[in-house]
Image (cartoon, rainbow, N blue to C red; front, side):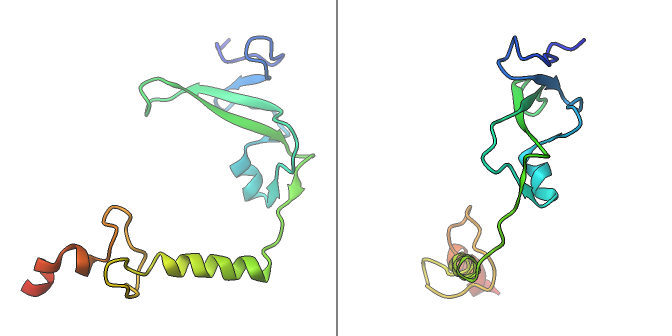
Length: 124
């Protein structure tokens, strides 16, 4: 079969499956989150290994958790909503001119477009 097929976990220490061949009843963190679940402190049940084309053939890994042991996602409290709103508002304030840019400041620039490209603003 495949070199990443090790359901007993003798070679890799965890039950290991090739890409797209994970057993039913297991899911990754993202798949659990899409169902409104979280791992809830359970140990890793298995893993999926594959060779990535994006990273020059490096072996990638995704951990799997049991769906039946997963717990529901905790609801957001008013304090968490307030903290999230405050963090998002801080991402809109330009550190150079201290004004609300009206959009999230790109990390590549580190400041609003007006401060990053002042010569283009004068020409327009």
